[in-house]
Each structure stands twice: as structure tokens, then as C-alpha cells.
Image 1 (cartoon, helix red, strand yellow):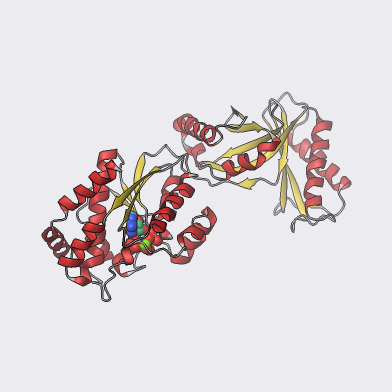
Image 2 (tube, helix red, strand yellow):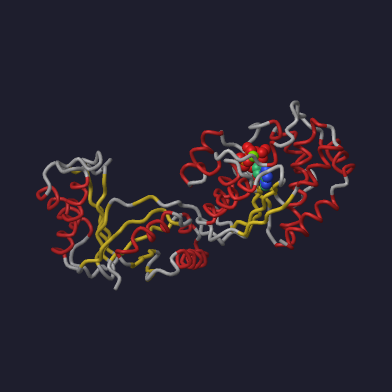
Length: 392
Ligand code: ATP
Ligand code: MG
């Protein structure tokens, strides 16, 4: 038996005109995939999604709704009988629920004011939206002393919707917004163990992009723990984007060659070029349409505009850098929200800091970068690394 229902508000996909149905289909499939194994039923009607499930599964269901790209918000709602008295009684219950949560007295987590909003899709319902709003508002004021109406800037909104059934709800949760994952192709994320790249992956997933990831490690210079950390990051990120396929590449030989044969100040930029080169080959082989990185302009020496130009100089696939204009605090805040931050700050080094030159080039010249890169003859080592990954 389904005894709890949620109403989902769709986000940006409502702006998709004739394509909206296709976006809705993907959204629906994603939610069903996230809740596979739970007894749920999903109803779609007039651009609204209603999800019905069981009280026992509430935590898992609400967790999925909080990770679902493409919804502007959700609220628990209990369908009630379609007559005005029942609807008003449900509004009072909703108001009381809010009041109790705040410890009574009308202070609802700082909420003291409310308004009622009503929508009537079923025009045969004998009471129009305006009358419903007034009646429900009066009834709530009478039943719950301490609450006031504020139509302009209320602390809480109690909503009535009259459709095939009547729905009363309030206190909606904000959704992640964005577009359903799977509506914008698939990109290959260069996933380090750091703070930025998981956030970059999240940003692109929120635009509907499916995410594959590649991680480069330099075992035994980097530890098994460092690798496990990246696997956990991929799992967290995957919980938003319908899973992630993670390619793990041993880059020790490439890195040793750079260390031995290249001018030390260039080591980081050349390593980045090699990562990009390798990632592009993987992307082409797996039909990913672009690369995604977590670079943020001038955050570190390798991310000056000149060095980013060097890093990208060999790649022809588009490289998306969703964090390029964000400052570190904004990125950290996002990482905390999505749950990757605590993992990212675990102290295992990734391979980038291994051979960090004390005085890196700050404004590399791309022509010089390409010349140095070619002189290292990394191609066979990169091919070998890709082959080894396949055999893993
Ligand atoms: P992050 O926090 O994502 O590690 P960062 O600020 O440390 O970023 P860099 O070390 O300059 O920046 O890395 C820039 C980008 O290159 C990263 O965001 C990531 O996309 C990619 N990258 C760096 N190291 C690796 C790695 N070991 N494996 C895969 N991708 C990497
Ligand atoms: Mg890093």
C-alpha cells in the first residue's frame, strides 16, 4: 500500500516547449532508476509529478528527491477528498503541523506569517481559487492563534491544488534545479582527489550531462588510499548523475619521463598536457563528447590563462571548465553542499603535487609547450597506460 505522496515541481524543463515531453521522460526514468527496489508509483499529470510510496521508505525516497537533477522543488502532500470542508480541514492540519514544529505559539522555525495559495485545474469544483484562499486563510487564523497573514512576504505558504483529487501541502523543499541527467550527452571528467573537480562534474551533471570520469594515479608514489578516496568521490558524484563510470589510469611512467627529461619548471604543465592527451583518447574511444576539468582561473600557477592555453593546446574535443570564474570559497561551499568536501580534504596526496617544481613557469608559451611535449615522446607510454587500464 502507498501511504505517502510527494508532489514534484519541475524546473527549467518547463521552458522546453515542444521538447518538454522528452525531458520529462528522462526525468521519470532517472527517478525510477534511483528508487529501483522501493515500492513506489509515479504519476504524471499536467506537467506535475506525483510520487507515491511507503512511510518506511521515506528517508530513502526523500534522499533521492534531494539528488534528482531537473526538479525545482518537492513537497510531501496527502491527497484528500475533493470537497471544500475536507480541503479546509487539511489546511488547518497543515498549519498546525508548522506551528508545532516551531514549539507552538506560532513561531515556526522563525515562521510567523503565512499565506494560502490555491489553484483549480478542475473547474467543476464549486469553489474558485480566490474564495478557497479566503476561506482557508480565515479558518487557519481562527484555529491557530499566533499566525498572521502576510500576502507579500510570508514565512510559509500553504498550497491547495484541486485536480483529479485535492492536494494540500506546504513547507516545500528546494530541489537541485537544472536539467535531467541524460538529456545533454556524456562528458569525461578529469577527476582528481581534490575539491574542485567533483564540483565541476556536479555542475555539468546539473545541465543534464551524463558523467564518466578518469583518474590518474602514480602508484607507488601515490597511495592505495588516495585511489580509494577518488572511488568514493565518484560514488558520491554518481549518486546525483545515475552512476559514474570511472577509468583509473596508472601514470607513473609518464610522470617519471617528465621528471627526468623535461625542464623542472615545466613539469606540472607538461603533466597536465599528458593527462589531457590521454583523457581525449579515452573520450574518443568511449564516445564521450567533451572533457570536463575543475580549473579556476589563476587559482594556482598551472591555471593562469597562458598555462591553461598550453594545457589545452593538443586537445581538439571541447573542454568544459564550469568553475573557471568561481572563487575558491564558492567552490568549497558547493562541495560541502553536495557532500564531496569531507572526502576531498582527506590528506592523501594526488600525483600532481608529487614532483611540484619549486618555481613553476607562470606564463608558458604554447609553442614552447608543444615542442617540449613532443620531445618527451610520451605517446607510447600513454598508449601503454590505456592498455593496462583495459586489462585491469
Ligand atoms: P582539483 O581540486 O580538482 O584537484 P586543483 O585546484 O587541485 O583541482 P589542479 O591540480 O591544477 O587543480 O588540477 C586542475 C584540473 O586537472 C583538476 O580540476 C582536474 O580536473 C584535473 N586533474 C588534476 N589532477 C588529476 C588527476 N590526478 N586525475 C585526473 N584529473 C586530474
Ligand atoms: Mg588537485
